Amino acid sequence: MIYWILKHLIVGPLVKLIYRPWIEGAENIPPTGPVIIVGNHLSVIDSFFLPLMIDRRVHFLAKSDYFTGKGLSGWFVKHFMLATGQIPIDRSGGKASEAALNTGLGVLDKGNMLAMYPEGTRSPDARLYRGRTGVARLVVESGAVVVPAIMVDTEKALPIGKKIPRVRRIGSIIGEPLDFTRFQGMAADRFVLRSVTDEIMYEIQKLSQQEYVDIYASSVRNRAKA
Image (cartoon, rainbow, N blue to C red):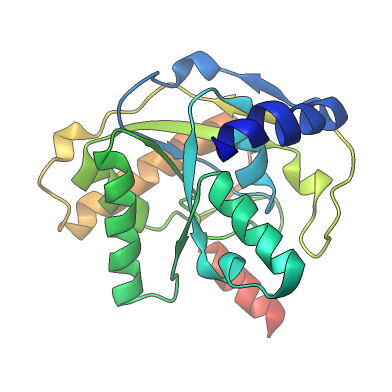
């Protein structure tokens, strides 16, 4: 109920009035059943604009830091994240990664839609980086329909390091569904996982026309910090 109120009566109408978001290919999203949306990640606001532009509710696996803030602002962020379908997970790796996978499978087992960013983090320079195979594991184990979806110009509205979005039009393009059921039962094969991940990244790149860089985005960001 809170999600519906925010999307249709409060946040949704206000955002649409200010940013005039556009979408292409919305008809490519199956109306029912488990779906994994895979896309590029240009800005922190990707996870807020995409759900506003499609009819089905979207669930994201969000880092747990968003849910542990203090004071009034922390309370608001936590409840806004929960109300918009964000699910807190520990992204520190190891056993935490396995727990995140199980959380995602739980969402899909209920016939819901889950959105993920194969790059694992925001692009530091609007280029498209190598995908991580954790997404492929989820795809192969769940058997869910995979739909590529890209965000357009969100990095211009809210670049890394900025806190207040600029007013400009933001878009999304939804590609045709992908079927990976031919790999069912092969989630333990790392070569299969890399093949699935690379195919997903290829489809994202076709939609976005971003320059592709065959290294992890996190490596570039870590070098920049150093």
